Amino acid sequence: MPRSGQWGRAYFAVQAVAGCLWWIAVFLDPAVRRATLGGLDPFLVAVFDVPLFVLASAAAACGVRSAAFAGTVWTTVVAVALAVYATVSTQAGLGVLAMGAATAGSVAGLCLVLLGRIPTAWIVRGPFAFRPAPKRTKARVHVAATFGQIVVFWGFFLGLVPACLAFLEQRWGLGLDIPAVAVPAGVAILILASALGIWSAAVMSTLGDGTPLPSVMANRPVVAGPYRWIRNPMAVAGIVQGAAVGLILQSWLVVGYAVLGSLVWNYAVRPLEEADLSKRFGQEFQRYRETVRCWIPTFPGSRRTGTANQRPVRE
Image (tube, one colour):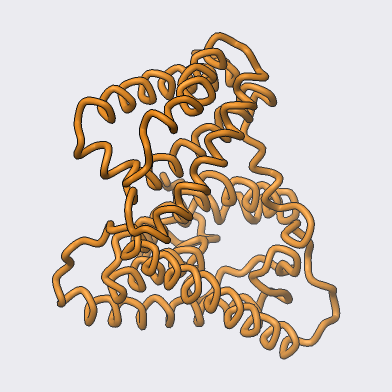
């Protein structure tokens, strides 16, 4: 299996080929040109993009680190500039999506080339670093802090961000016809998911001697309420809430945002969080982890945490 740096080089090789094919399509097919560049002059854009995107990606694939860095910077600049252009002109929406994906891929590829890994640990630094809550704090303080966090996080991640995405989706001409029944379905799902989130937060703050926020984490493991059936019900609730908001706004981009959030949480945040919990709570957390799934509920009667007949479960 290739080393991490080789995976990064492989990505840039794929990106170079994809960029080359895209430029061929731009000059051969007016529909592709309009969808991805709008009214921009393709010859003028190509003068800069071919060497700084296509050729730089090819050089990065050959192991030239400076080319990987230059190509990533250029891709990021183009993605931002194209997003501004599409928002103002209502053109080139597909180009924004393509360059946005290329930017994310280039950043990941650059990290693999330069560092040999994607530094997910950076996510939990600074104000998001894992720290237990101060001990001897009264439960009502944790409850108040928890619900303050809910107002802020839900207002931002379930209110402001989806509203902006839905607006951009329309400005970029990317909207799809979604059945009207999606709206009441989204409302029902949002209510249920929000109830799960509030229940989980209340249990964590009253029994865990802390809050769900990483910087004020619980001092005791909590295996009560929804935590008896699923390891991180608040994450599940948040992801489902995001998808429900997407249905309410009739925005596939918001639903995609929720799906992307689930992937980031599962593959970047969850391993770090569970490593911290394992370090702090040892075998107690390991037994819980082996008994209760992360995504699929483990209902009472099938496997019980802390019983003699508990059996490991798969994710």
